[in-house]
Image (cartoon, rainbow over all chains, first blue to last red):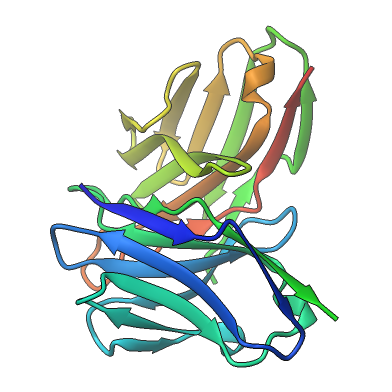
Length: 114
Length: 115
């Protein structure tokens, strides 16, 4: 069975500081990994995805994530936080079985302080 | 651009009412999903459908049913709304066609309040 763990339900950083959101997964098959972002009262928007190509994946808005098989991790980073990055971030792993299900983490709420 | 739309952004219903949440996608996707989102619990899968008239239960199907009569439309039904169904409901779609990476496309969500 697949699962995702996001460490830290709330993370607070200062504007301009490094953003690091942690995600660990477990999967018995080669995983596809995703980071989604959710702004207040909106749906989820894809930030980036890993699909077994390059282990360092670049996404939108300056975010990137590195797939580390030995650590079963897929942490999300951004060198310099911006106020507009304040949102909730979800890590997800797939495929969840024969259908195209994704397994989502419980989310990390990022606050950016001025 | 893939577009997933949901019939209402905000909805207020009374306990015991039958509630319909509609979702439409315009990308000819085979698979569609309904999730509910609650603080601290992330996204939990209620039901999903992999083809017209085909459906499978997700992790929390109790109190819900679904309907998929056309490929582009997937409806979530609360047979008799209860206060513990107050939540954010998210619809998503994807395709199993070769080359797809299982990425799901989400609608804007419906925030349902049951009083």
